[in-house]
Each structure stands twice: as structure tokens, then as C-alpha cells.
Length: 366
Ligand code: F6R
Image 1: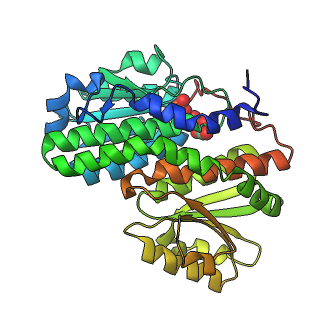
Image 2: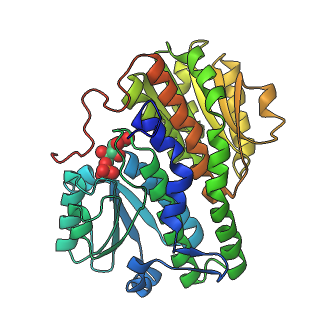
């Protein structure tokens, strides 16, 4: 049932061109030039008039929520707050009937996320769910929602569910942005076009597998890793670090690249691998300076760059080239090499990648 792959995780990483496509199928209609998301239809006005959107989730789903914060604020200009469900539920949060709460969960069974929903519901907020498992507790507890169509995810470390969540959240941000008039027809069409090209770009990123495996060989005995990114790639840095921690048991931290100088830079020496997501976007120049800062301290740089970049290859020890896309869609592509890197490192260390120690696929206890 692993479809010829050695592990479910690898199979699921490789399924992403398909699962991303499935998550936009019937929703993104390029020819007709419009977007459809059944779950949002009855709430379109509510979304369009929302004063703010709260997002609650845990783990990787929380990272998808962070990407959504950038997407929704950027495209739809609605203020967004992203909360760990476990903190939100216990800190007496301010919630009103005017709020929309988006709950994100692969399993749909995460206890803290479910409790956060119940709390928000009791205050009269509208709850929108983004779940992968059909008929799950969270899907049933929400007022409306959209399923991700990633298919069953067996590997404990979430991969295709993450990219499916980001796909659905991208569609949502585009729909709300267009409705609110913050996303023009032209910009909408452009993004629709780019989004429809994402599966083939992910396919291309997957061709990097052998190259990434070689990088994994070199760093498999490292005891620490730092992951840096800015803007849309900041949540990707967090997700890259989480994937590595979970399955290889190597300590890793994700940071917004500019925060490095406020602490983590002290960790950098010739033994520290630093994965920098440095694709060509509005923060590119600044990330290049961050790379220089790491280099000056002899950190070992593994950079994820846009194809054709001719600056970073002269600075980084290893360069992983991914296809170019719109800044807002880059997480869907840039996360892929990081999933592969953690997978190969874990396998080389002899870890049980599909069932890492101490972790469960559904966290049904708080
Ligand atoms: C990471 C991972 C966990 C889950 C988290 C939330 O690879 O698997 O961090 O993302 O437990 O789970 P769901 O999305 O099922 O609510």
C-alpha cells in the first residue's frame, strides 16, 4: 500500500502534485475565470465584512495558519491572528459574534483545536473548518468549512496535508480578497493562473530528491539545525525545522531570518547547518544580507533559491533550486525540499520515519 515507496512519508511527499490539484479541483475554474468554494458561499458576506479573522490550530496546521495570515492580510486586507489552540482556549481570549474563527486540522480530532472551537462558538463567533478527514469531530463542530482533499495521510509527520491546507487557504484568501475588492480582477486571474501551475512546479521540485539525499548524507550527524526565512517563507522555515525534529530527533529551530541577530546568531559556528529559504521575492535582498551574516560566522549554508539565481550560489555551500512562482504561492513549492531533507536525514539515521517516537497521528488528549 506504500505504492512502491519505502515509507508512507515519502509516498505522501511525492503525492503532492496530485493532492494539491485535488484540493483545488472544482474550486479553481481557470477557463470560466472564477473560484468556487461550496463551504464559503453562505458566509461570503460574513467574510467580506469581517473585522478580523482568528485562526486556531496546532503543529503543522498552525504553520499553515501562519501562511494564511500572510495570504489573507496581503490579498484580502482583513486583520488575522493565528493562535495555538492550546493557548487560546485557556487565556480568556476576546471573541465576539463579529469574529470568524478558522480552525485547521488534518485529523479533525485534535483535542485542543476542538476545545478552542467550542469556546469560540460559545461566544457566538462563526467557525469555519479546514479538515482533511471527512466527518471528523472538528468538521462536525464547525458552522461551515472546506475539506482538503489530500487523501489519507498515514505518516505521522504531516506533508501533503500541509500543502493541501495552504492550497485551500490560498483559495479562501483569493475569494475573500476579490469579494472585498482588495484583489483586482487582473491580479486574481494572475494568481489563478499561477496556482494552476503549482502542481507541475511541485513535480519539478520533487526531481531534486537525489540531490537532496546527497546533502542529507553530509549533514546526517549534525546535532543542531537552524532554518531561516522571511515573509511567506518564515512559516516554511518553522515547518522545515519541525519536520526535522519530529522524525530525525535532531534539534532544529526555525526563525524569521531578521530575528537571528537578536539571539540565535550566537549559536552559529563552523558546525551549524543553516537552511535559508531565499527565493526571489520582496525580501530577497534582505535574506542575502542574512546569508552574509551567517557566512561571516562560518555557518554552513544550505540555501533554497529560485531557479537561475546567480548570486547565492557564490555564497552558500549548497544550493537547492526551485521553480519561480508568485511570492504568495511560494510556500507550496519551497516546503517540498525541506520535507525531503528531513526525510532523508531521518532514514540515514535509522529512524522510524512513519512512526516517530512519542508522537501520535491524532492528538486526542490535551
Ligand atoms: C506535524 C504533525 C503535528 C500535527 C498537529 C496537528 O508533522 O503531524 O504537529 O500537525 O498535531 O494535527 P491536526 O492537523 O490533525 O490537528
